[in-house]
Image (tube, rainbow over all chains, first blue to last red; front, side, top):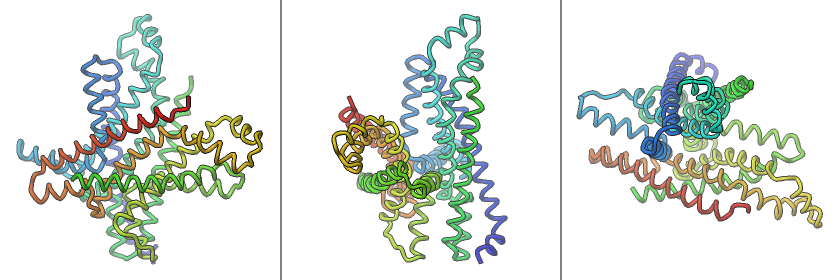
Length: 220
Length: 203
Protein backbone atom coordinates (compact mmCIF):
# COMPACT_ATOMS: atom_id res chain seq x y z
CA UNK A 1 0.00 0.00 0.00
CA UNK A 2 2.61 2.50 1.17
CA UNK A 3 5.20 1.24 -1.28
CA UNK A 4 2.75 1.52 -4.17
CA UNK A 5 1.89 5.12 -3.44
CA UNK A 6 5.53 5.90 -2.74
CA UNK A 7 6.36 4.56 -6.19
CA UNK A 8 3.65 6.69 -7.79
CA UNK A 9 4.70 9.80 -5.88
CA UNK A 10 8.44 9.37 -6.45
CA UNK A 11 8.89 11.95 -9.26
CA UNK A 12 6.91 14.48 -7.28
CA UNK A 13 8.85 13.87 -4.05
CA UNK A 14 12.14 13.79 -5.93
CA UNK A 15 11.47 17.25 -7.36
CA UNK A 16 10.69 18.51 -3.86
CA UNK A 17 13.84 16.95 -2.44
CA UNK A 18 15.93 18.52 -5.19
CA UNK A 19 14.47 21.92 -4.42
CA UNK A 20 15.23 21.44 -0.72
CA UNK A 21 18.83 20.51 -1.48
CA UNK A 22 19.29 23.35 -3.99
CA UNK A 23 17.85 26.02 -1.67
CA UNK A 24 20.03 24.73 1.18
CA UNK A 25 23.16 24.80 -0.96
CA UNK A 26 22.49 28.31 -2.24
CA UNK A 27 21.61 29.63 1.22
CA UNK A 28 24.72 28.05 2.76
CA UNK A 29 27.05 29.29 0.01
CA UNK A 30 25.75 32.86 -0.02
CA UNK A 31 25.50 32.98 3.77
CA UNK A 32 28.99 31.59 4.27
CA UNK A 33 30.68 34.03 1.87
CA UNK A 34 28.84 37.00 3.37
CA UNK A 35 29.55 35.71 6.88
CA UNK A 36 33.27 35.28 6.21
CA UNK A 37 33.52 38.88 5.00
CA UNK A 38 31.57 40.16 7.99
CA UNK A 39 33.67 38.07 10.34
CA UNK A 40 36.91 39.45 8.85
CA UNK A 41 35.46 42.96 9.10
CA UNK A 42 34.64 42.56 12.75
CA UNK A 43 37.97 40.95 13.59
CA UNK A 44 40.14 43.59 11.88
CA UNK A 45 37.83 46.54 11.36
CA UNK A 46 37.82 49.76 13.31
CA UNK A 47 35.45 50.68 16.08
CA UNK A 48 32.55 51.65 13.81
CA UNK A 49 32.80 48.60 11.57
CA UNK A 50 32.94 46.28 14.57
CA UNK A 51 29.89 47.95 16.05
CA UNK A 52 27.89 47.67 12.84
CA UNK A 53 28.69 43.98 12.44
CA UNK A 54 27.82 43.30 16.07
CA UNK A 55 24.44 45.02 15.76
CA UNK A 56 23.77 43.13 12.51
CA UNK A 57 24.66 39.78 14.08
CA UNK A 58 22.61 40.45 17.21
CA UNK A 59 19.55 41.50 15.24
CA UNK A 60 19.69 38.64 12.75
CA UNK A 61 20.29 36.08 15.48
CA UNK A 62 17.52 37.49 17.63
CA UNK A 63 14.84 37.07 14.95
CA UNK A 64 13.51 33.52 14.59
CA UNK A 65 14.00 31.91 11.18
CA UNK A 66 10.30 31.83 10.37
CA UNK A 67 9.87 35.52 11.20
CA UNK A 68 12.82 36.33 8.98
CA UNK A 69 11.24 34.41 6.13
CA UNK A 70 7.86 36.10 6.59
CA UNK A 71 9.48 39.51 6.93
CA UNK A 72 11.44 39.11 3.72
CA UNK A 73 8.42 37.62 1.94
CA UNK A 74 5.88 40.25 2.99
CA UNK A 75 7.83 43.34 3.98
CA UNK A 76 10.76 43.37 1.57
CA UNK A 77 8.46 42.41 -1.27
CA UNK A 78 6.03 45.19 -0.37
CA UNK A 79 8.87 47.73 -0.33
CA UNK A 80 10.30 46.42 -3.61
CA UNK A 81 6.88 46.52 -5.24
CA UNK A 82 6.45 50.12 -4.13
CA UNK A 83 9.84 51.33 -5.25
CA UNK A 84 10.69 49.28 -8.32
CA UNK A 85 7.39 47.55 -9.12
CA UNK A 86 8.82 44.05 -8.99
CA UNK A 87 8.73 41.25 -6.44
CA UNK A 88 11.01 38.38 -5.54
CA UNK A 89 9.67 34.87 -5.95
CA UNK A 90 8.97 32.83 -2.81
CA UNK A 91 12.05 30.70 -3.42
CA UNK A 92 14.31 33.73 -3.76
CA UNK A 93 12.87 35.16 -0.53
CA UNK A 94 13.48 31.88 1.24
CA UNK A 95 17.07 31.62 0.06
CA UNK A 96 17.68 35.24 1.00
CA UNK A 97 16.25 34.83 4.51
CA UNK A 98 18.13 31.59 5.18
CA UNK A 99 21.34 33.12 3.81
CA UNK A 100 20.96 36.06 6.22
CA UNK A 101 20.60 33.58 9.08
CA UNK A 102 23.66 31.64 7.95
CA UNK A 103 25.74 34.80 7.47
CA UNK A 104 25.19 35.94 11.06
CA UNK A 105 26.24 32.55 12.42
CA UNK A 106 29.31 32.34 10.18
CA UNK A 107 30.33 35.94 11.00
CA UNK A 108 30.25 35.11 14.69
CA UNK A 109 32.30 31.92 14.39
CA UNK A 110 34.83 33.52 12.03
CA UNK A 111 35.39 36.37 14.42
CA UNK A 112 35.79 33.94 17.33
CA UNK A 113 38.20 31.70 15.44
CA UNK A 114 40.39 34.60 14.26
CA UNK A 115 40.55 36.23 17.67
CA UNK A 116 41.42 32.89 19.24
CA UNK A 117 44.62 32.79 17.17
CA UNK A 118 47.47 34.60 18.77
CA UNK A 119 48.59 38.02 17.59
CA UNK A 120 51.98 36.52 16.78
CA UNK A 121 50.59 34.72 13.73
CA UNK A 122 49.74 38.03 12.09
CA UNK A 123 53.05 39.58 13.07
CA UNK A 124 54.98 36.61 11.72
CA UNK A 125 53.29 37.09 8.37
CA UNK A 126 54.07 40.79 8.34
CA UNK A 127 57.66 40.13 9.36
CA UNK A 128 58.30 38.01 6.26
CA UNK A 129 56.73 40.72 4.11
CA UNK A 130 53.32 39.28 3.28
CA UNK A 131 50.37 41.43 2.31
CA UNK A 132 47.11 41.43 4.30
CA UNK A 133 45.26 39.00 2.01
CA UNK A 134 48.31 36.76 1.72
CA UNK A 135 48.45 36.51 5.51
CA UNK A 136 44.73 35.74 5.65
CA UNK A 137 44.81 33.06 3.00
CA UNK A 138 48.02 31.24 3.83
CA UNK A 139 48.36 31.74 7.60
CA UNK A 140 45.10 32.62 9.32
CA UNK A 141 42.63 30.71 7.16
CA UNK A 142 44.18 27.22 7.44
CA UNK A 143 44.25 27.50 11.22
CA UNK A 144 40.86 29.15 11.66
CA UNK A 145 39.03 26.67 9.47
CA UNK A 146 39.71 23.82 11.88
CA UNK A 147 37.92 25.78 14.60
CA UNK A 148 35.08 26.77 12.33
CA UNK A 149 34.15 23.46 10.74
CA UNK A 150 32.29 21.75 13.64
CA UNK A 151 30.03 24.78 14.28
CA UNK A 152 29.72 25.45 10.58
CA UNK A 153 28.34 21.95 10.04
CA UNK A 154 25.82 22.52 12.81
CA UNK A 155 24.62 25.69 11.08
CA UNK A 156 24.47 23.88 7.77
CA UNK A 157 22.16 21.25 9.29
CA UNK A 158 20.13 24.12 10.76
CA UNK A 159 19.70 25.58 7.27
CA UNK A 160 18.54 22.20 5.96
CA UNK A 161 16.01 22.05 8.81
CA UNK A 162 15.09 25.66 8.07
CA UNK A 163 14.07 24.84 4.50
CA UNK A 164 10.96 23.15 5.93
CA UNK A 165 9.79 26.63 6.99
CA UNK A 166 9.65 27.62 3.32
CA UNK A 167 6.63 25.33 3.03
CA UNK A 168 4.71 27.99 4.95
CA UNK A 169 5.25 30.50 2.14
CA UNK A 170 4.29 27.72 -0.29
CA UNK A 171 7.66 26.97 -1.84
CA UNK A 172 7.19 23.46 -3.28
CA UNK A 173 10.04 21.89 -1.29
CA UNK A 174 10.24 18.39 0.19
CA UNK A 175 8.14 18.86 3.32
CA UNK A 176 5.18 20.38 1.47
CA UNK A 177 5.20 17.58 -1.11
CA UNK A 178 5.28 15.04 1.72
CA UNK A 179 2.27 16.71 3.31
CA UNK A 180 0.35 16.74 0.03
CA UNK A 181 1.09 13.11 -0.74
CA UNK A 182 0.25 12.05 2.82
CA UNK A 183 -3.06 13.88 2.69
CA UNK A 184 -3.94 12.51 -0.74
CA UNK A 185 -3.29 8.87 0.06
CA UNK A 186 -4.25 9.11 3.72
CA UNK A 187 -0.96 7.52 4.76
CA UNK A 188 0.12 10.06 7.36
CA UNK A 189 2.28 7.92 9.60
CA UNK A 190 4.12 6.27 6.73
CA UNK A 191 4.94 9.42 4.80
CA UNK A 192 5.83 11.52 7.84
CA UNK A 193 8.06 8.69 9.04
CA UNK A 194 9.64 8.60 5.60
CA UNK A 195 10.25 12.37 5.74
CA UNK A 196 11.89 12.03 9.17
CA UNK A 197 14.16 9.34 7.82
CA UNK A 198 15.14 11.48 4.82
CA UNK A 199 15.94 14.57 6.90
CA UNK A 200 17.85 12.41 9.35
CA UNK A 201 19.91 10.91 6.55
CA UNK A 202 20.69 14.31 4.99
CA UNK A 203 21.79 15.86 8.26
CA UNK A 204 23.62 12.78 9.45
CA UNK A 205 25.53 12.68 6.17
CA UNK A 206 26.43 16.35 6.68
CA UNK A 207 27.72 15.56 10.17
CA UNK A 208 29.85 12.71 8.85
CA UNK A 209 31.18 14.98 6.11
CA UNK A 210 32.03 17.51 8.82
CA UNK A 211 34.09 14.98 10.77
CA UNK A 212 35.89 13.98 7.57
CA UNK A 213 36.67 17.62 6.74
CA UNK A 214 37.80 18.28 10.28
CA UNK A 215 40.27 15.43 10.07
CA UNK A 216 41.37 16.58 6.63
CA UNK A 217 42.14 20.11 7.84
CA UNK A 218 44.00 19.12 11.01
CA UNK A 219 47.20 18.13 9.26
CA UNK A 220 49.40 20.45 11.21
CA UNK B 1 1.12 41.05 19.95
CA UNK B 2 2.35 41.24 23.53
CA UNK B 3 -0.12 38.50 24.44
CA UNK B 4 1.39 36.48 21.63
CA UNK B 5 4.86 37.09 23.00
CA UNK B 6 3.71 35.91 26.44
CA UNK B 7 2.22 32.77 24.92
CA UNK B 8 5.52 32.13 23.15
CA UNK B 9 7.43 32.43 26.43
CA UNK B 10 4.92 30.13 28.13
CA UNK B 11 5.37 27.49 25.42
CA UNK B 12 9.15 27.85 25.58
CA UNK B 13 9.24 27.42 29.37
CA UNK B 14 6.97 24.37 29.28
CA UNK B 15 9.04 22.76 26.55
CA UNK B 16 12.20 23.52 28.51
CA UNK B 17 10.71 21.76 31.55
CA UNK B 18 9.95 18.63 29.50
CA UNK B 19 13.35 18.82 27.86
CA UNK B 20 15.12 19.12 31.23
CA UNK B 21 13.40 16.01 32.60
CA UNK B 22 14.18 13.99 29.47
CA UNK B 23 17.72 15.35 29.35
CA UNK B 24 18.40 14.54 32.99
CA UNK B 25 17.39 10.89 32.74
CA UNK B 26 18.90 10.43 29.30
CA UNK B 27 22.24 11.95 30.36
CA UNK B 28 22.57 9.59 33.30
CA UNK B 29 21.59 6.76 30.96
CA UNK B 30 24.56 7.59 28.72
CA UNK B 31 26.95 6.75 31.54
CA UNK B 32 25.01 3.67 32.59
CA UNK B 33 26.55 0.22 32.45
CA UNK B 34 23.73 -1.23 30.38
CA UNK B 35 24.56 -1.25 26.69
CA UNK B 36 20.94 -1.22 25.43
CA UNK B 37 20.16 1.87 27.48
CA UNK B 38 23.16 3.77 26.11
CA UNK B 39 22.31 2.72 22.55
CA UNK B 40 18.69 3.78 23.00
CA UNK B 41 19.71 7.25 24.18
CA UNK B 42 22.26 7.61 21.42
CA UNK B 43 19.66 6.74 18.78
CA UNK B 44 17.15 9.16 20.34
CA UNK B 45 19.63 12.03 20.38
CA UNK B 46 21.02 11.45 16.89
CA UNK B 47 17.57 11.04 15.38
CA UNK B 48 15.71 13.87 17.11
CA UNK B 49 18.52 16.40 16.87
CA UNK B 50 18.54 16.05 13.11
CA UNK B 51 14.81 16.57 12.64
CA UNK B 52 13.35 19.88 11.50
CA UNK B 53 11.26 21.15 14.44
CA UNK B 54 8.41 22.12 12.11
CA UNK B 55 8.15 18.51 10.98
CA UNK B 56 7.96 17.36 14.60
CA UNK B 57 5.19 19.85 15.35
CA UNK B 58 3.18 18.73 12.33
CA UNK B 59 3.81 15.12 13.28
CA UNK B 60 2.46 15.55 16.79
CA UNK B 61 -0.51 17.65 15.69
CA UNK B 62 -1.63 15.89 12.50
CA UNK B 63 -0.23 12.37 12.65
CA UNK B 64 -0.42 11.23 16.27
CA UNK B 65 -4.23 11.69 16.43
CA UNK B 66 -4.45 8.93 13.79
CA UNK B 67 -3.07 6.42 16.25
CA UNK B 68 -5.27 7.74 19.04
CA UNK B 69 -2.99 10.27 20.77
CA UNK B 70 -4.72 13.62 20.64
CA UNK B 71 -3.26 16.94 21.80
CA UNK B 72 -4.57 20.50 21.57
CA UNK B 73 -2.69 23.00 19.43
CA UNK B 74 -0.51 24.44 22.17
CA UNK B 75 0.12 21.07 23.78
CA UNK B 76 1.27 19.67 20.44
CA UNK B 77 3.84 22.42 20.12
CA UNK B 78 4.98 21.95 23.70
CA UNK B 79 5.30 18.18 23.25
CA UNK B 80 7.17 18.49 19.96
CA UNK B 81 9.57 21.19 21.12
CA UNK B 82 10.01 19.37 24.43
CA UNK B 83 11.15 16.22 22.63
CA UNK B 84 13.43 18.28 20.39
CA UNK B 85 14.87 20.17 23.36
CA UNK B 86 15.27 16.89 25.23
CA UNK B 87 17.73 15.66 22.63
CA UNK B 88 19.78 18.87 22.82
CA UNK B 89 19.73 19.03 26.60
CA UNK B 90 20.85 15.40 26.80
CA UNK B 91 23.96 16.41 24.89
CA UNK B 92 24.47 19.45 27.14
CA UNK B 93 24.15 17.41 30.33
CA UNK B 94 26.31 14.61 28.95
CA UNK B 95 29.09 17.10 28.22
CA UNK B 96 28.69 18.62 31.69
CA UNK B 97 28.75 15.18 33.27
CA UNK B 98 31.92 14.05 31.52
CA UNK B 99 33.62 17.30 32.55
CA UNK B 100 33.26 16.48 36.23
CA UNK B 101 36.53 15.13 37.64
CA UNK B 102 36.31 11.59 38.97
CA UNK B 103 37.54 12.74 42.39
CA UNK B 104 34.21 14.40 43.13
CA UNK B 105 32.19 11.21 42.96
CA UNK B 106 34.94 9.37 44.85
CA UNK B 107 34.72 12.02 47.55
CA UNK B 108 30.99 11.35 47.84
CA UNK B 109 31.54 7.63 48.14
CA UNK B 110 34.35 8.17 50.65
CA UNK B 111 32.12 9.97 53.11
CA UNK B 112 29.81 6.97 53.08
CA UNK B 113 27.07 7.98 50.66
CA UNK B 114 25.53 5.22 48.58
CA UNK B 115 26.21 5.45 44.81
CA UNK B 116 22.70 6.73 44.06
CA UNK B 117 22.91 9.36 46.79
CA UNK B 118 26.30 10.43 45.49
CA UNK B 119 24.68 10.96 42.12
CA UNK B 120 21.81 13.03 43.51
CA UNK B 121 23.56 15.14 46.14
CA UNK B 122 27.10 15.46 44.81
CA UNK B 123 27.18 14.97 41.05
CA UNK B 124 23.85 16.54 40.13
CA UNK B 125 24.44 20.05 41.53
CA UNK B 126 27.92 20.26 40.01
CA UNK B 127 26.67 19.02 36.66
CA UNK B 128 23.81 21.49 36.67
CA UNK B 129 26.07 24.44 37.38
CA UNK B 130 28.44 23.30 34.64
CA UNK B 131 25.55 23.14 32.22
CA UNK B 132 23.98 26.56 32.90
CA UNK B 133 25.55 28.56 30.02
CA UNK B 134 24.72 25.95 27.39
CA UNK B 135 21.21 25.52 28.83
CA UNK B 136 20.67 29.25 28.39
CA UNK B 137 21.54 28.99 24.70
CA UNK B 138 19.17 26.05 24.33
CA UNK B 139 16.39 28.05 25.95
CA UNK B 140 16.85 30.98 23.58
CA UNK B 141 16.79 28.68 20.59
CA UNK B 142 13.60 26.99 21.87
CA UNK B 143 12.04 30.41 22.35
CA UNK B 144 12.82 31.27 18.76
CA UNK B 145 11.41 27.93 17.64
CA UNK B 146 8.07 28.77 19.26
CA UNK B 147 7.49 30.98 16.21
CA UNK B 148 6.93 27.74 14.29
CA UNK B 149 3.72 27.28 16.27
CA UNK B 150 2.25 29.78 13.82
CA UNK B 151 2.34 26.93 11.30
CA UNK B 152 -0.55 25.20 13.09
CA UNK B 153 -2.32 28.48 13.94
CA UNK B 154 -1.32 28.85 17.59
CA UNK B 155 -1.94 32.52 18.33
CA UNK B 156 1.59 33.48 19.29
CA UNK B 157 3.58 36.51 18.14
CA UNK B 158 4.40 35.38 14.60
CA UNK B 159 0.81 34.33 13.90
CA UNK B 160 -0.53 37.58 15.35
CA UNK B 161 1.71 39.75 13.23
CA UNK B 162 0.88 37.75 10.12
CA UNK B 163 -2.82 38.22 10.90
CA UNK B 164 -2.40 41.95 11.50
CA UNK B 165 -0.38 42.39 8.32
CA UNK B 166 -2.92 40.56 6.15
CA UNK B 167 -6.02 42.02 7.87
CA UNK B 168 -5.06 45.67 7.96
CA UNK B 169 -2.36 45.80 5.25
CA UNK B 170 -0.04 47.38 7.84
CA UNK B 171 2.69 45.13 6.44
CA UNK B 172 5.59 47.39 7.31
CA UNK B 173 4.54 48.15 10.87
CA UNK B 174 3.52 44.65 11.89
CA UNK B 175 6.68 42.89 10.69
CA UNK B 176 9.04 45.54 11.99
CA UNK B 177 7.26 45.35 15.33
CA UNK B 178 7.51 41.55 15.36
CA UNK B 179 11.24 41.64 14.58
CA UNK B 180 11.89 44.28 17.23
CA UNK B 181 9.92 42.38 19.85
CA UNK B 182 11.78 39.15 19.16
CA UNK B 183 15.19 40.83 19.21
CA UNK B 184 14.34 42.70 22.43
CA UNK B 185 13.02 39.54 24.08
CA UNK B 186 16.11 37.56 23.09
CA UNK B 187 18.49 40.26 24.33
CA UNK B 188 16.61 40.55 27.63
CA UNK B 189 16.59 36.79 28.15
CA UNK B 190 20.30 36.68 27.33
CA UNK B 191 21.05 39.42 29.89
CA UNK B 192 18.97 37.65 32.51
CA UNK B 193 20.73 34.35 31.81
CA UNK B 194 24.09 36.08 32.07
CA UNK B 195 23.05 37.32 35.51
CA UNK B 196 22.07 33.81 36.62
CA UNK B 197 25.25 32.42 35.15
CA UNK B 198 27.40 34.85 37.10
CA UNK B 199 25.45 34.02 40.22
CA UNK B 200 25.84 30.26 39.86
CA UNK B 201 29.39 30.10 38.55
CA UNK B 202 31.57 27.59 40.34
CA UNK B 203 34.25 29.66 42.08
